[in-house]
Length: 96
Image 1 (cartoon, rainbow, N blue to C red):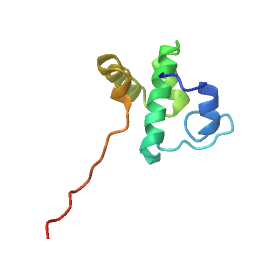
Image 2: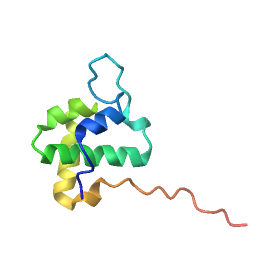
Image 3: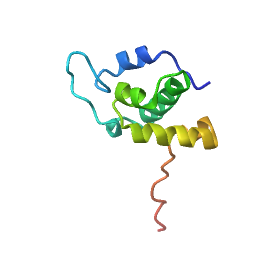
Image 4: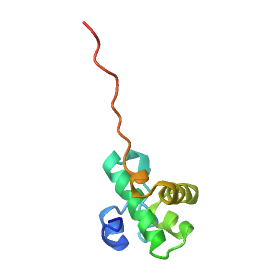
């Protein structure tokens, strides 16, 4: 299921993302682990599906409105799996 809990809980767990009433600096979402980035994408899409406007979701999660619209586009085209963290296989073994 796409909805993984409340947005309020997410913002509590990741206080450096999005607008914070105490003026905490935003953290670049690219510095998060791939699993945390995946959770961010899924949570943001679930919040849009829950009725919040894309630009409001972008502000709340500390990302651009453009990327939220891209996540929604990918979700509508390919479903929840389009939001999964990419698999980075890296360089293959060197032959001896």
